[in-house]
Image (cartoon, rainbow, N blue to C red; front, top):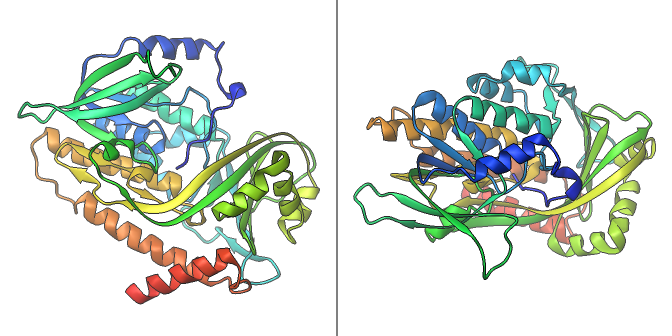
Length: 409
């Protein structure tokens, strides 16, 4: 799942928790049994599950500061099963997240269609207060005995010469931006979990690259609702240049997004994102719903939403999970669920490694391969439903990929 750029107002520099986190960063040990690179849902789930299954010392390295905004505010009903395994389901229900009755979409036709979750035995999907959700996972990881190092960037890694195959990780404080006077910390570990997002930073140090099959970009706008009442469904609308997403989220806020090709992003960003505002307001379905709201405190973020898979996702003493292993188009709505499930699977591998056991489950690599194949088929199906603008650059490119997937099936 992409990480959004830092906003000063999101960083609680005067908060007691912030100062405590900064103090903890300075007390890093020289060695840990496991280092998890990345403190999103995938990395935190891995840390929680590893500590529940083993006595291994675990360090989570996260480049963001506590409380910063992240992209991803919805999750499917099945997420509850994963939260139960992580021991946080009760907290989740008490945290003020809001249920979502389903989706309303203008896709492949001019009028709206509806997909309700009322028949799902696991209940509705969820719209998250993402900061509270993330803090819930952080609190659980710390309770389980993991250490979290905030505002710490992973720079590089090299393998030790010992037979234990120890990883030496080079870390630095995010605030230290001077290339000539960068203070670094070396941490040794027996096992690395790469949860660094779609760029897979640790895997790149091993010269392992992502195989990309689509490279979309998104503009995301968060805003507070000053007045008005919106609809409860998540709203999707296809347009010639891509598709729009709009949803209410807890805390009296809304999030709006366009997924499109890179050239369109440059046009929509111009003049303080006014072209984006005009484009979403002129949509036939989402636009009228947005105009019923009075919005304030807008913030905009631009991020890549590439689809791809890592050519190698595991070895004897490391594993890549979440977006580092597989990155999906957000049309799949699987980011948080995928991250949590991968974290649980990573813990199985770590536990087997430390206990010198043969894993009883299919290899993580096999599961990842199957997961990406299913994703490609589902993505092709969703995009194949829209046939109105096949001559546009966006939909022509999607159609080419649909034909490629069908040809491989």
